[in-house]
Image (cartoon, one colour):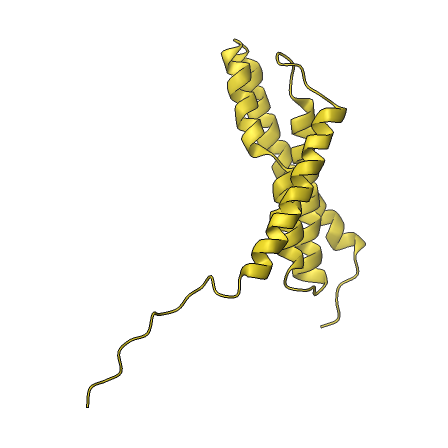
Length: 145
């Protein structure tokens, strides 16, 4: 008697439709909010990209809060983190625009401003995640063990 033929193997994507939908919906909302910020506070081509910097810092602070609240302090539905974290905040923060802004500033001959923006955004984003997490740990009561 021969052993049974092996099956198709594990399919890690199976059952991920709801997660994909949550990320897509959240991403659409986050990207729309980012676009709205750029309409409210437009940046001239030759100006420092303050709006992009602000959006990225606010989004990173919110990510710090979200990860503490969902990871350490509260339990939530399995789609909340992909919807809010990957979707909304991933769509809201815009590191692709950040990279384009650096290139634009360098192409305009403002290499020092481009390097300053590169460092300021990275440092401020990291500080914002840390500050958001720190504040969340102090402001939200811990879940019972």
